[in-house]
Length: 298
Image (cartoon, rainbow, N blue to C red; front, side, top):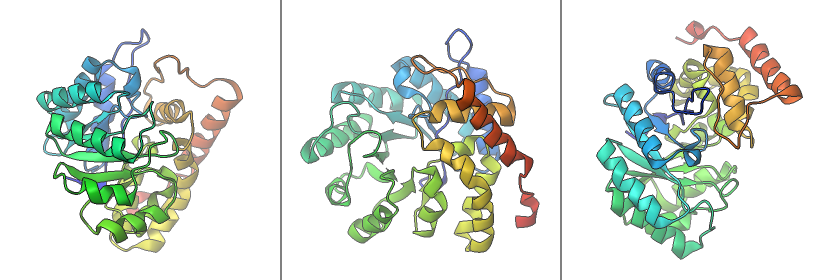
């Protein structure tokens, strides 16, 4: 359950701002058809904090209808522990296979508070937990030392490591061994993280290029490093789209170019316009114009 490519999916909306269940399901199905190991819903890319709890539960139900035996995870990213625990309990009833948990994204918790927050959410949901450590965007860092203490809780099974420092992967393995499955959460460190032994990749841009991203993962895990490097060099400019304040709008534009899906986002976000839009549009189309023939890697 806790290895491989697991994209953090975008949530699709209609022009009036309501959920577009059909478009969301279609996007998810493309990932599973490409061989991805599961789907993570309602994270940053999924605009989870712009959705009501009821909407988030609807999204994870859609995901579970698509993933079948593969896992569908719901992201829990609440300012308060009470609200996070309530969502975790409801996620279990909605059929989520696990949770990706961001510790307190508004109040920046200290060591003891971070541990207590994660353990409370795990107990409430009684589901496997992927800890989301992102000191860059959320200013809460789940360190390897914290993971030693969290390892006592059997619900804690994985970590999405997004410190933007590739050295952290090795530090985790050196501190807690193979107790946790380690996923990279930084798209433009994807290959580097796999080569450092990470078990999986919570990807963003891959939802616009699911077959290429899956092939890259498979090549790297098979030790076909020269081929993986070649494919990664083609992908790298696209992967940079994930590492931005505007990752949602940029990746939704890439999806539109790739699959014709709509770009609607929840306010206060707005779709890209002007020079920014032109730059992303040109980048995606330039990369797609020289898209590699994946059959040569069979």
